[in-house]
Amino acid sequence: MTIRYICMGCESVLKIKDEKAGTRGRCPKCKAEFDVPFSSDDDGTEGIGRSASKNVAPVDDIDMPLELTPEVEDHPDFDPLEVLSPSIAEVRTSSSDSGPGANGKKPSIAELMRDFEAGKKKERKRDSQSEIQSQSSTPSSVKTVGTATDALSRAYQQKRESANQPTVSAKDAKAAEQRALFFQFLLKKAGPLSALVILLLSGYYWYMTQNFYHGVPLYPVTGKLISQSGDVEGLRVMFSPVSSGSEDQRSAAEGVTAADGSYFLVYMEPHRGAPAGKYEVTLFAKSGMPVMLSGGMPMLTVSDTETNYFELSL
Image 1 (cartoon, rainbow, N blue to C red):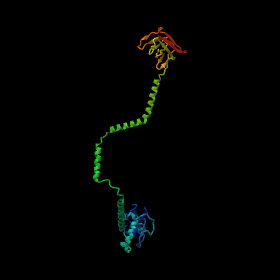
Image 2: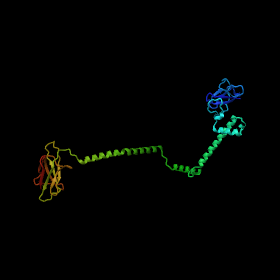
Image 3: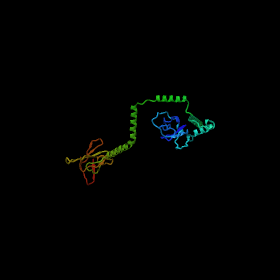
Image 4: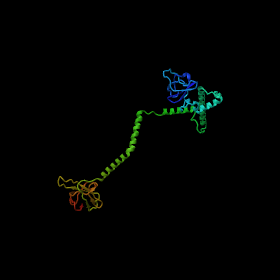
């Protein structure tokens, strides 16, 4: 007679031999310990028990595989073989035809476990065969990379190439990284900075070439040198200011005669004219020697209101 026990932890139905009644057992599925109850029937039929005294000696786990005790509803007519996996159900069917169960006797737990393991082995064998077939069905263009000799050759060649490459110290690598960052900074920032520098230089050059004049006001002074000989080209005419006091800040103005004897005064290149006031006129030859005018060294006055045109005679 066997005792049918429902585990309080996982609701699995366990079949236990009646000689284990009153001992300590453990559920093979949830590992919950329990007391094997005594059979509730006295007529030799299977009994269902749920509790017993806890002051009993522990025993080994019940030899019951997890696959044979799935979670099912509690029912008086429960048969664990009806909820077995398909492989076990097939084994049961085949064993019922040709095995020990052919005479109407149910197979034992050990027989069911052996049949279950055999079914698992068959499934693994079928899986391996299908994997081999899938690998063999791959296109012929997929080939191996090479033999072991080729792999060794490639590894040796890579080792030689790495050995021939120059080693770079950490300091050199850091310096190279800093240079790269500096060049990157220049590429990003040097464009606007260069444009600004060029703009400043251009403005400075323009300012210097303009020769801005901030002195005393200038007035145009022109004239003509008359000579009986007719050779009056290249003579230098100088107007030297006659100072009227310490506040006079004028400077001399000069001019060079053309072929016809005409000239104009330049006070400060490139500004033409001369400040208003009295001047003493001096004439110099091409050699730099003074040339006497017919009236000596005349005194002329540059006006700020009238036209300043002066004729000189040799």
